[in-house]
Length: 172
Image (cartoon, rainbow, N blue to C red; front, top):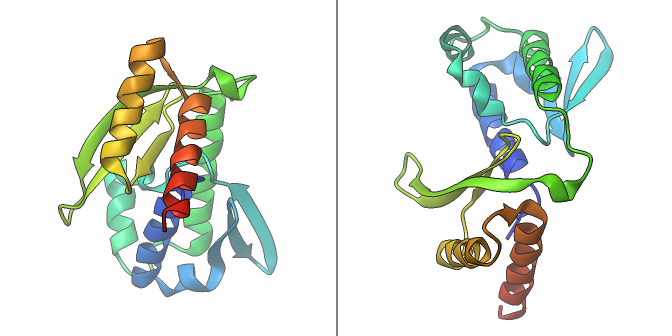
C-alpha cells in the first residue's frame, strides 16, 4: 500500500502512456523520485512534480490532441509546458507555512474508466490525491475525523492512513 504520493503514481502512469505515442519522450523524459527529468541538448533539466498532477494539462484541448499525435511534440516541448504549469501553480497557490495548515476540502468515491472504485480527495490548495485500497476503511476514517473536528487536517488524515497501512501490513 502506497499512501506517500498518489499524485506521483498517476504521473508515472500518464507519462508512460504518453511515451507509447512518442518515442522522443521515452528517450529524453523520465521521472526520477519527485522530479520530471529531461535531456535537452545534452544537458539535464528537472522540475519537482510531486505536487503537480500531470493529467491537468489534458484540460487544454490542443495539448491533448498534440499528445495523441506521434512526434507533434518533442520531449523538450512537453517538459517546458509542464514546467510552466508547475511554476504557475506554485505562484497561484504558494505553499503554506505549515503542513498543519492543509486540510481536506472534498472526498469522493469514484470509478475509473475500467469501473474500478477509488477515493479522490482534494486539499485546500487544490492538490488532488487518489487512494485505491481499503476504501471503506478510509471513508469511515474520514467521516469519523470530520465528525470530531469539523475540518479534516491533512496531517491528521495522513497519520491515520499510516496507522491503517501499518495495521494492514501486520495482518498479512
